[in-house]
Length: 134
Figure 1 (cartoon, rainbow, N blue to C red):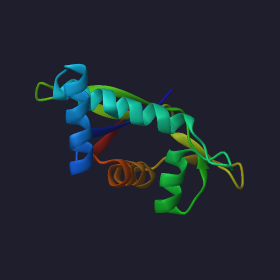
Figure 2: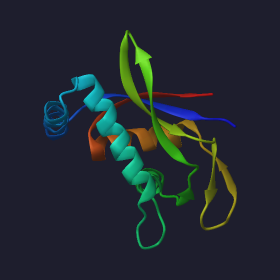
Figure 3: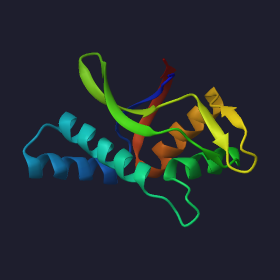
């Protein structure tokens, strides 16, 4: 099955930086580890919550940018290495979504994926770099 990996860096907002620093201090761990744990916590929590119509946070992010309600494949968090550093990534487990109105299968194009990544950065505060598809 195809996977889409959205690659992120560290916090891009002051509030999220403070949150990560406090987490690192509280758990006596490195900032790098705190960034990854906090990112995973965001992804896990937001993947499992839905609004009263059954839409996930990520589906709503896509709707904001693309004005389409699509049922997305499972989304999880992971890590990747860049210049010796472990950084967080979001993994979409599949490359197709389902249009909630018509039931048609839709390919998750570059535009859709970048909309999710950019809107996640805007809403949650982790810098979005790029995506890669396996």
